[in-house]
Length: 131
Image (cartoon, rainbow, N blue to C red; front, side, top):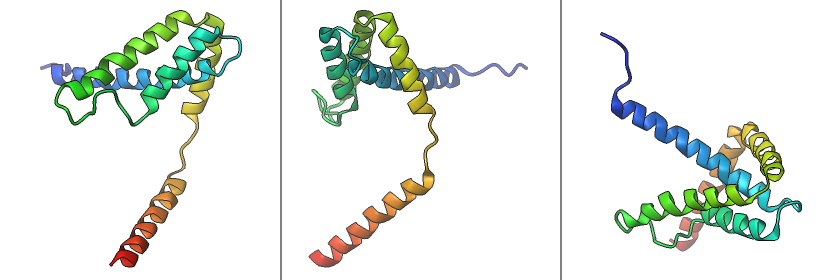
């Protein structure tokens, strides 16, 4: 018997890889929007796509079945594709280098734990004040 991946596992692995590439592309588009060498129209579109992708506000709220996530699965990738086609190659190459450097930075679990502790303490303080 071979150890071939099941279709479900390979689909999950492909989805994770796709999500990572979308994340990298969103950060790349963010840096490309800030590059003064990019044409202003492409910069504007890049800023809009990055803002939409990073914003918690959607055109169609996520609680609406199917349609809520469909806009995220269509609008963001199509916007990224359009921006990637409009941006000059040099601008995208520089933006990818910046995005890779930012995403490769180590994340501090200690700092994250401190922020969580602060929020919990504020929550307890607010609850004791209200009660």
